[in-house]
Image (tube, rainbow, N blue to C red; front, side, top):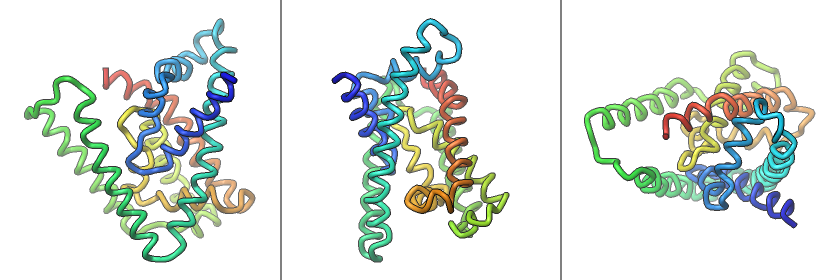
Length: 225
């Protein structure tokens, strides 16, 4: 029964990670498994005594998350492809979720009064997001990925890297980052399409996300402390 609950929690976290503006890390925190999740990820290779426990814990959480992502991606794929109105409504909903997540981030620390350094960092963050929009303003297509375009695959790896790293941090949305990078629909389409047809880009993005979780998450965790 405990394992079933872990799978269900993983599915909820997976669904949350698919929706821009919703943080899977926040749900992990709400479910009371965030500390154990970060402990298992951070100490999996260094703590041999608890490696078996970490393995099964991550297996059920990640397995549930993958199942949630695959199932909910089909719902979003339908909404984005059905017609222009459903597409516009879906993105308007995303905008509301992203805007609604700002108070959660602002209230995540007891001292968030505006200072010169904090405002400066916020401005730098806004500029970086705007730069990603301009850099990717031409918009790559999924068809380019069919031909394993090297530049598109490298870009997709880095999209996976940063979205994966932010995916598990409470208050941060990896999907919202993909929207700003212009690759959200591409990634959703990849996981909706034929695995045989998109196997290379799926592996590249997944490797980027896994690398981001393993490498960037400890950094984010240290910074947030």
